[in-house]
Length: 133
Image (cartoon, rainbow, N blue to C red; front, side, top):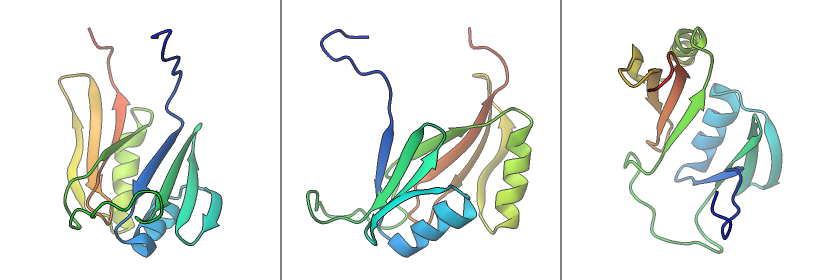
């Protein structure tokens, strides 16, 4: 750790949603993340382990032009146990989520599953399947 920047963890991720209603339904219902807090219809927070995932709309403090829906803006990776990757794939498919890349063992030591949220952001569910060298 850099003693001049004593950052210890990443606690909070904010997604500037382009389709707020669809994104809320996806993260709250499809993904099943528990609602942590709703500060307004334009700001909701979900708890994922020790982290917070917030959805908001542009405006207020940051009002940059939005990239078009479907344009890659970010990737989020969610870790699970190795045997849970296939379960997640099946559950998401049952809930109508299009799987971009099915569960695959990668040479770098992860079993991965890729899909997208309603705004087109890439989501990954992964498990470490062997230690990296």
